[in-house]
Amino acid sequence: MFRLILCLAALTVALAYKNPHYAAGRTTMVHLFEWKWDDIAAECERFLGPRGFGGIQVSPVSENLVLWDFQRPWWERYQPISYRLITRSGNEQQFASMVRRCNNVGVRIYVDAVINHMTGTWRENTGTGGSTANYGQWHYPSVPYGRDDFNYPECVISGSDYFCCADRVRNCQLNGLKDLYQGSEYVRTQIVNFMNHLISLGVAGFRIDAAKHMWPGDLRVIYDRLHNLNTAHGFPSGARPYIYQEVIDLGGEAISRNEYTPLAAVTEFKYGMELSRAFNGNNLLRWFYNWGTAWGLLASGDALNFIDNHDNQRGHGAGGDVLTYKQPKQYKGAIAFMLAHPHGWPQLMSSFAFTNTEAGPPMDSNGNTISPSINSDSSCGNGWVCEHRWRQIFSMVAFRNRVGNTALTNWWDNNSNQISFCRGNQGFVAFNNDYWDLNQTLQTCLPAGSYCDVISGWKSGNSCTGKRITVGSDGRANIVLGANEYDMVLAIHTGTESRL
Ligand code: AAO
View 1 (tube, rainbow, N blue to C red):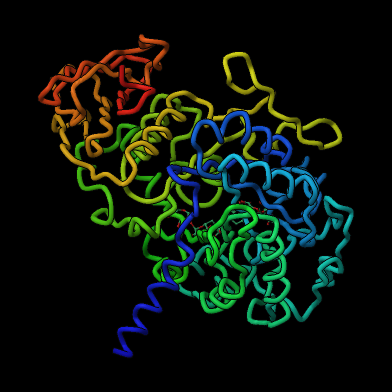
View 2: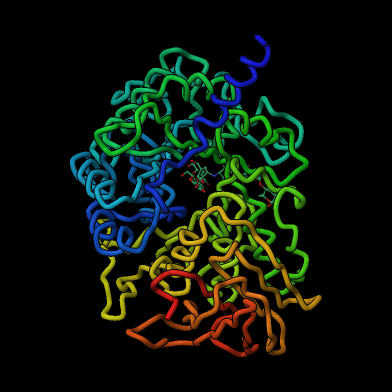
C-alpha cells in the first residue's frame, strides 16, 4: 500500500509540469521569435486569441549583453547579464501588460529561460538595460553573481564530450558561456526568484534553455521551488508551470533525454527531422502509419513537437536539414501532418526572414527592433514571415482544436506518398507528396454533408472559396489532390466554419 502511494505520488509529480494549461479547446503554441512585447499583446487580441491559438513561446526575457561587434545578432539574447526584464523586446511593464492582455483572450505565455549560463564574450560588457559585467572577473553585479557562483575549474565543452563525458557537458562551458553552478543554494535562489517573478506576472510555463547542460537533480530542486501559476490570471488553483526542457538527444550520446522526462516535458528534435526528411521526398509518407513511440519518439505527453526551431532553421543546434518557411509547399505539408496527428504537444515557428544565419531581427540603425506591419491580406511585412498567419497553418490549428482527443482511424495510403486519415468523426485529412495526382474515393468518417476544404480556401457565406467536398451517407467522398497544386494537403472538419 505504502509503495502504491509512493508510486502515485511520483506519477503526480511527473505529470505536474507536463500540462500546458491552455484555455479550454486550445492545443497549439507558436514561437514568436524576437517579437516585441507590445506587438505580441496586439497579436493576441487581433489574431491569436480569435483564431484559437493556445500559447506563445517568447524570446528570452532577461537582460542580455549588447553585441554591436556582431551587428546585434539574434543570439545575443542567449547571453544574460542580469535577471532584470529588459531586452530589445521591451521592459518589465510592457512584459506584464502583454501577459495580462494575452491571458485575457485565452492565450498563454511561455518564457525561454536561460539559466544555465551568463555571457560568453570579453569584448563587450554592457546589457540591454545598461547593466555592466566583467566577463574576465566572473562579475555580474546586477544579479549579483561572482566567481564562486560558477563551475570551476574552467573548461569548454568540445564536440567529443557529448559522446563520452556527461560531467563535462554539464560542468564545462557551452560555447564559452560562463557556466553557473546550480548546485549552489545561492545560485538556485537567484534562478528560482527570477522564475517565480515571471509566474507572479502570469506566465504559464518555461522552455528550459540548454537543460542538457544542467544536472537533473539540480533542475528538480529548482522546479519544485516554483510557485503555482497565478490564479488571478485564470489558472486553476494548484496548477504547476508547464516546463519543456531543451535536451537534444538523437541517440548515441552520453546524456539521455530519459534522464529528464521524469522531471518535465522535453523538446522532441526527432519529430521535425523525420517529417522534414519525408516531406522533402527522402522517405515515404506511407511509413508514418505508426508514427509515435514506435519510431523512437518520446511518449506523447512528454513531447514538445516542432518542425523547425529558431536554432535548426538556421543551422545551429541539431537537425540541420529541417524544412522551414523557405520551402513553403513541403513545410506546410509537414506542419499540417503535425497538427492533424494526435502525438504530443505541437509548437509552430514564426520567423523573421533571413539569409545571414547570424542576423538579428529587422532593426533600425540604433539596433531597435522594427515591428511587423500587417498587410491588407493579413500577411506580415517589414521582414517578418509570420508563418502562423499562413491560412494553411492557422486553419490546421483550428482543425486540431476541433478534433480534440479523438483517435486517429482509417489510415489509407497508396503504398507511396499519398495518405489520408480520420480523427474520430470530426476531421479528415489527405496528403499527396507523389509526382502524380491523387483522385480516389476515400473514407472521411464525417457525417454526410458538404464541407469546405480549409487548405485551398475557406467557407464564405454559403460557398467555399476553395474546394468543396461532398461526403456521402457512408462517410465516403471523392478526394482530388493534383501533384502540381499549390498545396499538397486537403483537410475538412465538422463545425460551422466548414460544414455547409
Ligand atoms: C555565440 C557564438 C559562439 C560563441 C558564443 C559565446 O555563436 O561562437 O562562442 O556566442 O560568445 C545561441 C547560439 C549560439 C550562441 C549562443 C550565445 O546558437 O551560437 O553562441 O546563443 O549567444 C548545443 C546545446 C543546445 C544549444 C545548441 C545551440 O546542447 O542547448 O548547442 N541550444 C540552446 C539555444 C541556442 C543558444 C543556447 C542554447 C545557448 O536554443 O539558441 O545558443 O543559450 C550536438 C549536441 C547538442 C548541441 C549541438 C551543437 O548536436 O547533441 O546538444 O547543441 O551539438 O553544439 C547532428 C547530431 C547532433 C549534434 C548536431 C550538431 O545533428 O546528431 O546531436 O549534429 O553537431
